[in-house]
Image (cartoon, rainbow, N blue to C red; front, side, top):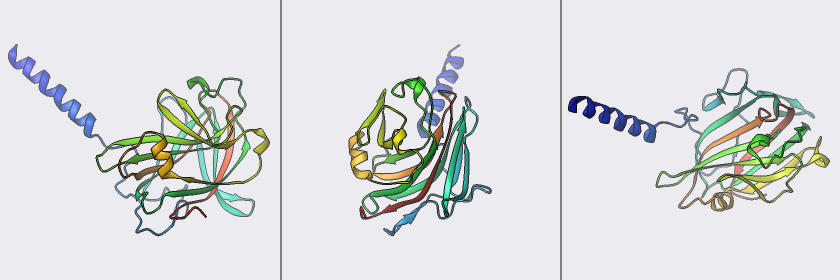
Length: 232
């Protein structure tokens, strides 16, 4: 009995150690790094034959969203579309925010989420376009958050918080549908806002489009997604 108990304890401890040290679902072994030079995040993306360092993260509970590099309004853009679906197309990164703190992008929503479910609730937590970010610091602490396009409820500049998870509202609302909007955020400020400490590194930058909670459809586009050292 003692041997069985000791073996059971060893298995539990080993399982706990594996869980604590398990790799992120976004680790590719080929993170994007920088020597302080501005980076175009979409420059190397091939959605037909997924480029090295990229991963399409799907969920057991939902079919995958559609991600396709295409042409929109005469420029190259990433199209994101959902039909009661959700997934994250992400770039594995290792980028110090001391060198490249500013995230710039343009996005356009052509088909918004149409639902009466409150987007402040878990049941209504769908957005036609959003960015998923994971940060870490020198102590190994990790913080995740999202930058979202609000459906009906939130004006730009604030946060939607569900539980303890932060969503920064960069834009949204139906009056802004169908037009390109240029955005810039200081990721150091975002990191501080969500409770991050120490010196942050960007570990993941993902494009996240979903309509699986509301069962809706959506379509949106991203282009000119860059990290730089200046806010211009």
